[in-house]
Image (cartoon, rainbow, N blue to C red; front, side, top):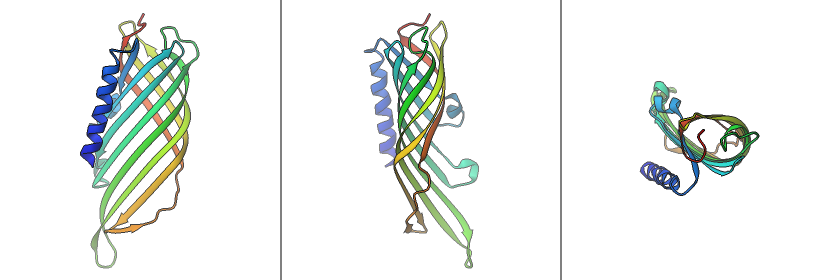
Amino acid sequence: MKTTKFIAFLAVFFFLGTATQIQAQVDLTTNPVNLLFGNINAGADIKIKENFSIEANAAYSKGDYWGLVDSRERVPVSLIGKYYFSPKQGADGFYVDGFTRFVNRNIQATYNGGDADVPTTVNFSRTQVGLGFGLGFKVVAPKGFVFDIGTGIGRALYSHDKINVSEQDYKVPELIRTIGYFKIGLGYRFGGNRE
């Protein structure tokens, strides 16, 4: 299943990379903070009009939370529509956005506890799909380099949590219905206006 998710992730960005040759202006970005921790993140922001663009953004992260859990896997995918108030180079400057977001998380932890001091394995998974709004700012340098920072908050329309403790499933009450994102994107503009 993990391999399938990763292949699907690569297929989406192969498609988006191919789209850069079809569209007049595409900003490809990645989050440098995620890269520092060995996580994958990429986005393609396609200009529709001078003051409107649509961005597809996806990530894949895996790790152990600095030894706090045995393993953690997270796959967020977002589609963001951005409205720019005063674009100077097309799809740049201050913007507000509306987004839809899918997030799948899986966490596994093992700990010793109880009277028998027997290791207990806990598996937790959460899948959410939601809508929200946000704001941000994008700068395009004369050579085509792009810096985009944004944040958003919304509500999960679908949320499913599952917990398994030592091979036994438990129902989890629906607790968190809030979704959001924080983005720092560095990248390059292909086509369009860079001056």
